[in-house]
Length: 158
Length: 474
Image (cartoon, rainbow over all chains, first blue to last red; front, side, top):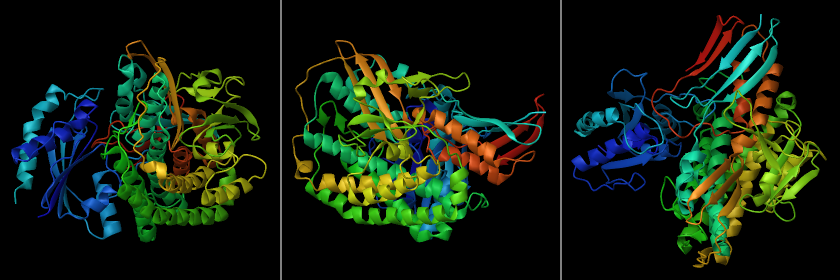
């Protein structure tokens, strides 16, 4: 199935950038070439594509709508009990009153509303502990990276 | 018994803003305040870095308008090194800036303001959003998404990558524009113009039907500020700063490098964000507004035909005086989007845009530079001082949301007093207060986002701190 992995977050804010590390390590495990810089393009083939963004934006819906499966990868806070969590997602709008923040559920809703299709979707999220001005992950979040890569790798298997 | 209501959209760690509404016993609002609780310390963070790193570092301030910081940083570095960019380089920078204006304004109007305008402030929140808009008008929504994409593609074409641009350097830019890239931009402009025209039709229709709301929704006098051309036309990338008073009369017109002679910042103990004001008038008499409404009030004309015609209509709302209505920020935003598309066409139609003369390597090092441009939300100021080795010793950033800090609080206070009648606060009342902030399109978040965003909450508290009422929006 045509699949896209979309990571998002800010790698300049420590654990907020965990998604890029998950994408990089997963690509490496699949034997795909990948750069050391989160600002470079990630691997892309007709069947499997990796993309990383600072944040989700409405025009990404056009890309997502072209795929059969999508997995979003993000950080999460202590509001979610599990340190690493993989959940299925459905289209659902979530308001963001003051900001430009767009959730993956909202993005899926846009796919449906604009392109009349929405891929099978999941969200992989990893607990973040530190969000200062630094590109290094906290030791606690870095320790969760292998588990997150395992989960994503497993999700990718047919 | 006085009640206190707090509206607090807390994103995970920033806790970036909240509105506190203090109510009297009779259910009227005594005072409403917008608190900016975010403190990033970016200026201190930058001190000690090398000046030429700033165009790469400062875009990380914001995920919504990184181009504005990128270009303002490059302009400050131009001045710091005394390296004036060649004309083609300035044109290419301005073209990238137009891409930023188009994508940012387009997103705001259609996705944040559009649902309020098309579906109504009192519509069910489950419907009053971009998806409700898509359901009501899918063709328009697709046009809006493509408009934003058009702006993003300009940025990507010049910046070379999707996330942070790598383009402007002290003295110019590091990449030429190819003819086929230029042609692709030009080919997308007509559809972008049509999308904005569709937005203007919606805006005008809405304005006609909602005159009463527009005329009581946060209407207040202030000064206005913008960059201008020598003939006081709208200028988004360069030019002098023009400041006009509440009647529209010019107070000052000055070079950006002299901004400290004219602008000072007031501090309140309830907000991390300072309150800039016109120094000679003092605070709060010297407060002013920036951004689309501020700019269209501070300029006399626009130098592109379609946008100028719309500006004339805009000015006709209050003949001979500035437009004070906060809701007309949305109208002004569309006029500016039209201007940015037309301006991109003008730039792309000039043969110099394809020139290879893009970098001035001759420097006359001065050790201090100010870079100013009109970011989507308003005037953005970068001011750097560096030692003889180019290491920054002082960094001052005044961002657009800062300039509008007073105006946003004033708008929140005005709207709360006009629309909120207690003791029970209704959803539509809350949305109007949020809309007063949204009209300014403040940039309060952006640095980090993750799963776990908190909903909007309103708490009604007694003077003793007892919780009387809670409203929550998921």
